[in-house]
Length: 256
Length: 256
Image (tube, rainbow over all chains, first blue to last red; front, side, top):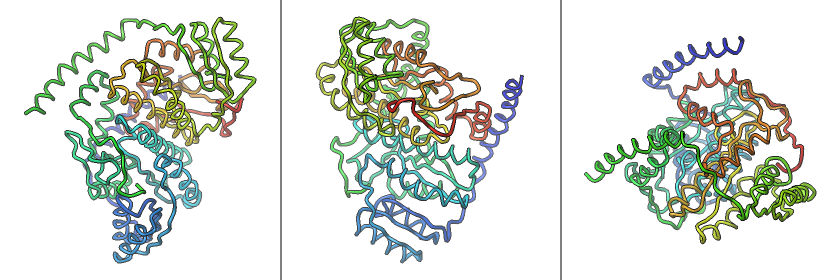
């Protein structure tokens, strides 16, 4: 009887929350202030990490920058200071690309207790479209990105269960980005992303506290359809979309 | 023009493959023979691994059994021989529960080349419902199971891309199982699974070459709904489903 009542109660909640979601889509979200906030960025020596650091510098955050590349990280810090922010650069090794998730776990373990004590903070996990859908010949990469998405989702659920509503989480899931991690990537419909575009969407996502930041946002639809459509159709669709890249995976730089 | 034609061609494929999927649902699938096939089972010293070994023994496969637990693995092998199968037991360390995915990767790397040469084989990845959806306080577990699901999906895509249609893949994703990994798990609607039930579904899934084996199969629907419904509704639903377990995670046995 009690269970039945609980289930009946779900119906108005479903209607209300669906309407709420659509209304929220129409109202532009306010961006929060990050002025004076401490922002730690790993892999800030180049690419997405560096450009993100510049954005936070413009917003007057206090920057703590990590990277394995001493030259890169100092360059980023100098530029952040020019933009008027306080920036501290540290050389930290996070180079094993298959260990991204373990690395994120260790970093989060170090900083989460203080965040929880203050019930204040925001943890961004950098994953990929490859953390939701798979691409042949990127087996290790996809596995680690699936792990990163799982990490973000479990962390989000854990903070909700503990009532720590002051600790926000976001997960960045972009399509191929033109940073040199994969050589000459291309798909037939979705253009290869430029880092600037990804960082712009990432900043918007962080400042409006969006949980899953897909770039382009149409990826979120593709991922749901992938779970519904029959396999034969998906295979035909994959042949048409035609994801391509050079088989030798290389780095422009040792750290990604 | 060419793209438009390709897209138009997708419509009949969608209709055909959807009808095909529904028809296939109605026709009971034939189970393949595994008599005389070499079957390697990791963690065969107890639980799901052991029970699966027994099932393959009944089907007259040649068993190669791995586990860290010498006593357990020898017991399993002896019972398999009693059931009329050839069984070889090896003590192999795969105890680090957070490294399940790396372990699977290494094992697959060792055996995949020979499988590909013969275009024959079947790789089963043991994941969990926690590889698709998350549970608070099982952060490391969910992350590694997300990675296992990503590994299976990427491997599947890779074999398809290489035209290795003789190499099959399956991924086991059960809800909580009563094996002692988690103490006193419970949810309000879905009962805790007994190992025998999971193994029965697993065997059916393997022998009918099912790609994703959800136990119970209703999990597949829940996972799609989770990606569509608004967050507020999902939180309300989670409170009603009420996944519970004791906070201290223990093992009945060192290996899971």
